[in-house]
Image (cartoon, rainbow, N blue to C red):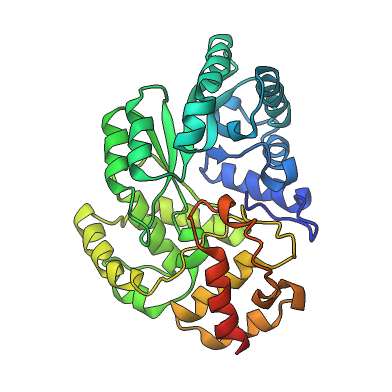
Length: 346
């Protein structure tokens, strides 16, 4: 969902193909997608990049949004489209996207039914779920014994799901973590982060990834990479011999509890809130707000905010509320936009 794009948001295949090929050539073998990422072009981008590469060397994952009230024929069509776009005969992991308790009770029987058929036909190898729901609900999904894997949020800033990682691992689920660098927040250069590192690192993103990889309950960190430099950095971090010990990781987590108190707004930049009916650039505004309030880069944040178009700024919000039900982090977006307006425009 973070591949190189053109200004209109469509995938730049001239950049994404060599980017993905470089990743594969340098040891990355797990690729996560969804049929609606990048305006429906994410799966195609992966399919183009893996052409000619032995399929057994790759692990492909994609998802379906059962909350769209699909019928079984719709589910089958989307699966067949995914296979075609991904340029493959089978998908290793097929997930129900952004599962919550309401959708679990309403749509999960259909998901299990059509994926059960797909499993028997060899079109998929495993089924699972991605999730942003409350911990007690996620626990129910894990204990249901209906899934082989899960994709869940976890990083230095947000360790809410730490116990769930262990539970899922104990129950034999594959454990995938999204947002290892908190949607880019932990990629911001900051001396305070480096000062607390028990191992030598070049960037705060490197430290964030090392923290996630140090957890024995985690099988894979799903990190969005948009540039060759980001791929190179992640490859270097994942293959480096100086890993964090569990003890060092716990100490590091403790220091971040204090910093977490400063984080009044945890936006991962997923853009599920977009598009805004009034064209307000919600993720960009929150990124600038965090840059100033949490990391102290006030001048950079103010310049960035000033560069937004008038209709993109917080003052253009009409408080229609269309964005809030879509937010996986359950952010009070209208309230936070008011705060950002006061901070940047007063």
